[in-house]
Length: 117
Length: 112
Image 1 (cartoon, rainbow over the protein chains, first blue to last red):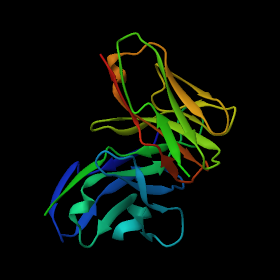
Image 2: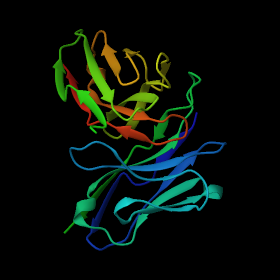
Image 3: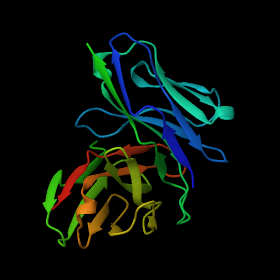
């Protein structure tokens, strides 16, 4: 079974600080990788995705992530955070379960990011 | 274009009661999913349906049943609710396979 690890469960930053959230996954085959964001009281929204090609992917709201295959990592970055970035961030990979299907996503446990004005 | 919709938004059940959570999508997606979200646990897949007429177990299927009513609708049923099923339930849809999934607003369920 594959797994996703997010290293930081809680992160507190000041506005304009730079952000990097770690994500590592364990899976031996080809992966598709995602970062989702959940703003307070809202549902999950896709921030960015990696399928193939350029390992540096850009998403919405100034976020980017870099896929490093040798390190099994897909870290999320933003050069300068804003108060409105306060949210829960989830890393996910496409999953395969013992039931035989290949469609589910495996999520990390999430990182709760708080931006202080 | 409403995307993925879920009903109800909130529900309180007593142990042993049953209920069905409804989900519908208007994006013509083949695949639909049910996840539960618990504090510090991220989201875990309960069941999914890769296409109309098929359903498969995910990571945490015990205590749940699903029905893919048609291409648009995918319901989740709790036959005999337990306090351990207190959670936020998210429905999602997608094109299937490697593609991203789109999530509904969630149902917050409390079992007392």
